[in-house]
Image (tube, rainbow, N blue to C red; front, side):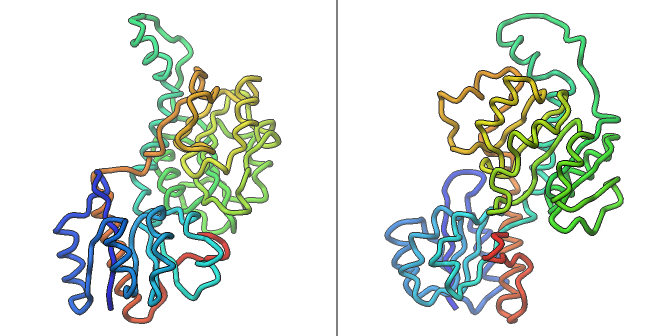
Length: 321
């Protein structure tokens, strides 16, 4: 069996010699090749059984990989891999869902603290050298946090929010398997009934046909005027035009956005200049431990693949996650 690993040279995605050694130790009989996307990768793809890499780099290779049986994504989102060609094919697809839970959950808490403690305001004042106390700062304890999507990331964010003394409520696709640190869990179709309770609404759901524009004006009108929306999932889960209107009309108090509909966010977007918006450049999942975790998970799935067992991170190509 031949495995093609697509390399990225920038941190924290750098695949080290130690990563490759660990992979070879786990599957000593496999031929393992690490190559950068491009001509070299195309050459190796022609007779490879498995391709592992980041979603943007894989699709150009599929047409050359006539023996391809399995694609593994080093990211959780696989929307870029769900082309009609791949969906219709017998190629199985897996992702790295689970490895981002710790950094993204901490990022979510960071957004929440920025708003409750007024950091976004005081940081702007610091840039202007203005010493001005903010008398309306608050605290997380006692706040109600609604998690929309209770996968690995949503659960870890819920656990941390609960540890801060928040009351955590949530919606998930099934509305089942409520963790002890979640006070109330309902199915996703009950979102509108849950929104009026929340001080923070955290989007942690995968992007699918069903979640496209899941949050739009109807949802913003159901939220508290003091509530903050946090999106660390995918930009297109939120109707950005409606969000801008809701923020301008003060239908909601603010937004913490790690993702936007178009990335990079256009310099002309009104979101940049809004004082009640915090923007981070889609890096909530990054950590110096990223590839260590990604390779460990790939090995776990690889062992299952070799045994003919169901992959722990198998993606349903119909549902998109």
